Amino acid sequence: MSIKKHSFGKTKDGKEATLYTLINKNGMSVSFTNYGANIVNILVPDKNGKLDDVVLGYDNVRGYEINSPGYGSFIGRHANRIGGAVFVLNDKKYELEKNDGENNLHGGFKSYNKFWYEVETFEEEDADSIEFSRLSPDMEQGFPGNLDISVTYTLTDDNELVIEYLAVSDKDTVVNLTNHSYFNLSGHNSGSVLKQKVILEADKFTPTDAALIPTGELRDVNGTPMDFRTLKALGQDIEEDYEPLKLAGGYDHNFVLNTNGSDVEKIGEMIDDKSGRKMEIFTNMPGIQLYTGNFISGKEAGKGGYIYQKRDGVCFETQYFPDSCNKGEFPSSILKAGNEYDFVTVFKFSADK
Image (cartoon, rainbow, N blue to C red):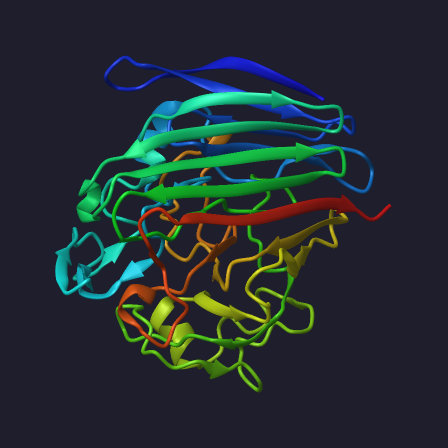
């Protein structure tokens, strides 16, 4: 294993960013930047051993300063949507930024993908890790509590990218951390992902209103286009005349995972027949947002100048359910003072020869 370090360009105010690359014995590599703790590249071999970058993104830090789609992004303090940009905790009302209509999305206009992080690296025989950490001060983004946060990325010789989120607050608060990488197993510049296949261990999903705030219902996927319990192409049902799909412009929904709530379990996979690549997904979070890049503008240049189009990538955002801080029937995203928030997500890559 090895860790390499390079300049990743300068921000608009002249601060230099660093790109850190972990490389395993198989030639797989993953790159991250200390600006935003964002995932920049994931290079994995296909069935012929050819390496391709399978996540959408930018060539330097200036792209990540804007990054309206959230490519590769570390998201917090609260991923996904909070209805009305408000929640009540311990009888106190907290008002947040309205950056998605009347709602709060991914913590506000400046999510955790736009802050600088302290960096620590760890090299072991069969795995290397990089830890990004910072203190999110009391009332940053409108959330209570000084929150010590870290996200640690580990690359193993089994081609696993392990993401561990840790956080501790000195006050009761709400926390919901995730990663917003857009995957395309044919390669980041290969076009639509709609022919790639997905399976998810989820019997239910959370339908939403027109503003994509969950209604509180846990709806059975059986007999609907939301059923991914058997492997199917992302594009198979995406244009169906089904209200949740029409409201979101495709898949942009939280699935209720069939997990026990404590162990890190396999909850799904993505398969690309063209390249032979497979990505298995493991987590101990209760939900996952499947998002098919419906709002990619088709106007912005990404890596190598490639112009990404709508549905050129798909996100698997492991999470507490959207608006869980306002829905008592959902698993709670409230973190009590002094308690540890500790969740893991794993993306494991392989290729059929």
